[in-house]
Amino acid sequence: MNKPTKRIEQKSQPKRDIKSDYRDENNQHKLDITKEIIDTIKGLKGGLKDYPIRDLVKHAQKFGPELKRQRLETNQIRKFLDAINQLKAKLIGNDFSAIETEVVLLKPKLAYAAARQDAVKALNGVMAEAIDKVHSKDDFERLVQLMESIIAYHKAEGGK
Image 1 (cartoon, rainbow, N blue to C red):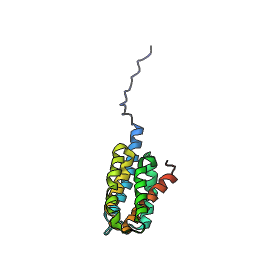
Image 2 (cartoon, helix red, strand yellow):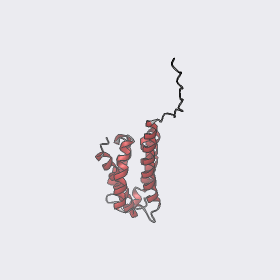
Image 3 (tube, one colour):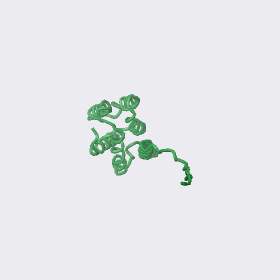
Image 4 (cartoon, rainbow, N blue to C red):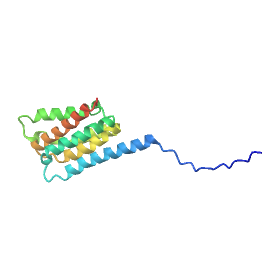
């Protein structure tokens, strides 16, 4: 006669949600680079012009691809980009005071885009902090360089 075999019960471990882990890692990376840029900008003694260009490019090189991973599309921030370019054109031959109010009003434009689309939130955080440091023509030029660098690396990564 066959002996009944003892069945050993193993405690099953809860299944890991790999997608959730992936999202957490991506969000952590996004938070790390976003925080690094914001902390650098906050730590500037003067205006945004004091953001070392090599650091700016290094940060944009990390941040642009991260925005692509977050599915940021250029059309989601087109109004913001257009506004910056219009201000850039308006600044030619004028004093910074001619565009200062409009520079500050870029913050609500980007906040609106971020409220409509999660992918814009990280960019909103960085650019809002940068806009707070714009007090002169040189600061504005560095803001333009920051935005252009981020978009360039975003596109280089295959962003639309």
